[in-house]
Amino acid sequence: MPKRDFNIPQPHKSNGWKIKIRGREYVEDPHISIIFKTTTWRFNIRDLKFMDISPDPSDIPDDVLEHIKKLENLAEYEKAWDEEYGKVNPVNKNYADELKKLEEESKDGQK
Image (tube, rainbow, N blue to C red):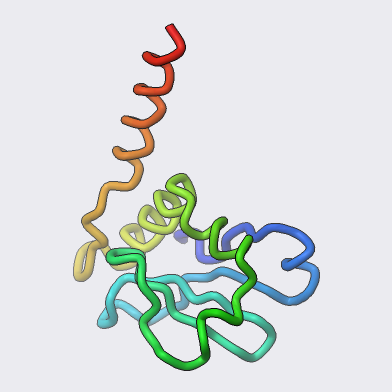
């Protein structure tokens, strides 16, 4: 079974924040759900935009948004989405390849 729950920085995890890929969402654009208690925001992992006007995305703590937008986390979300829904609705962004390329460039720059 693909991973559906993802890490979130403290203290937010302890305060009730979660990042998930929910079930039966293959007909929608690829996205993660950012959940705080009973409130949910949907963040499109293909175009890196929020899918809804409400609830207001500015209510999400800045460090949670920064965490979500890190390339290594986007690669993890893409992999999980594609394992679950890739046959019918793949992300097609190749974040893992982008991450690998950046790591190689970083190593080359350190030589």
